[in-house]
Image (tube, rainbow over all chains, first blue to last red; front, side):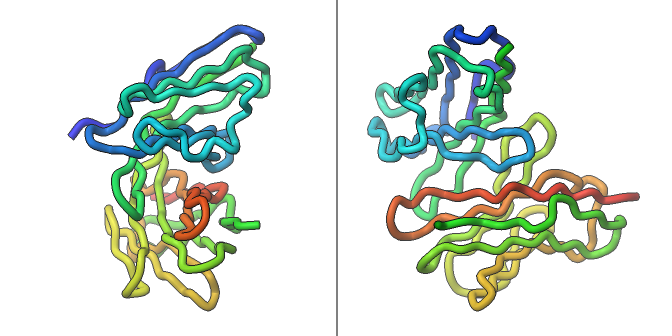
Length: 113
Length: 114
């Protein structure tokens, strides 16, 4: 079974530029998560999807972050414009059923200069 | 506020010795409890979970965890550590009421010395 796929793995951008991350979850997994992981810390939830619906986006900074999950499969997370403090690893995870054991992708390491 | 605490930033153990990585939580109700491991430049990998039943849960790679409801703890254990166990370990708690958001601890780095 293929795991969660994320791209790109690394991204370096100048501040104020836009950036987008892509995630393809495990086939059949209805729930998709985007997490932010700062160095030395655990993942923090940004947004959770159940199929196409964002059911928890309370931690997503909506002034600059946006996400979509078209057709309930792949998802894209966008930042526009990026700030220096956005430098972190962005993790995507998916799960199916309850309790939701989450399967994580390798993450995208974003560096904002 | 709901929280997960991993009181040790790093645990050092000699290969072949038993290891324990500690986790305590403050979450109402009867949450689901998880342990994940993260290797360098990799995403988190599921190790084990507690839902209900036997307080001792067995997982991948010889790891096990002991749930203690009175102490609200879920410590990760392994009888005999391997150098390859060196990694970053995260405890996670998912409330089974309310928003169901999984809360992760800050992580504990395990270093196993040969």
